[in-house]
Length: 408
Image (cartoon, rainbow, N blue to C red; front, side):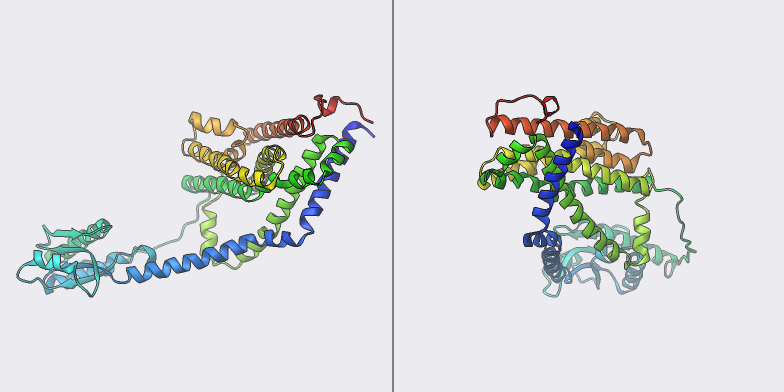
């Protein structure tokens, strides 16, 4: 058996060992259903926050102090203008009051009303109204100005504003919009970041147990440390693929039950390279991001001797991942800048940046170069991690690369 085949066989043996040791345990079920637990708690918190917000906003009003003749025009303009807002963006409900002897004092008193919380109050002539607004009431004041314009127009026309009955036709684009491509790029970057943030951090602790029970010394005596590092990395990557496959299947079944309007929204997110190629590139860049960050984390975690040290490493590791994500988003907002080039070339951020490029550009040759560049850095990180572990932890004097050592 050749040296290369022996190395591949040893690597896959280590990978299979770590994969089985991780998956076939009861704790893996807790990890597998962790997103469901997170979603459940997030939903409970969101529902509580929404109920608290609704309880506070259902008493908010905008007030127009106008004569009875103008009140009807105000109400008609409000009905016509309110229809263009989504439900969560609607202005507060309109209240009209007849003017008293001192409209300015009446407007100030409206903010102290026990019946509602006034956020903006209009009074005075419609062509030169005065609008008082409170905290976060500037948009409500602008809306009252729009209503005053409509009411004044109807008043001068001698009746209601003319109604327009448009003929609306749905149109399907043949290609994605630029905004859709940018949104797809942002979602691709976030998807790779979230998956690696959630899954790659587990690689840090894979060496701690091996060091504590002296198994790593047995493995290091039987196979090259490069095979041990790469095998452990591939084994944990297999766990990540199993996790993504499970939740991808679940989400795919849920998506099939969503209304057609949701499918139309997803259609606007078409990537520039086409959906099949984009899926392949997304999988490839997630793989590279996991292997790159995982090899770095494995090297760092291999230097720790206790679980306390591994826990202390969690914060710097998270900061590194967030830093790569921030760098990528900064480059994505300026596609032709030097910042974008740095994000695409720097090995730890390159998978994130190139996933965004796949959504925004239809050129394919940069991806072949980027994947080869990232694979080179994976090999370098694995080799460097093995040599640091050999010299710093095992105190071995051999510093020659594994490919230059003689087999047994």
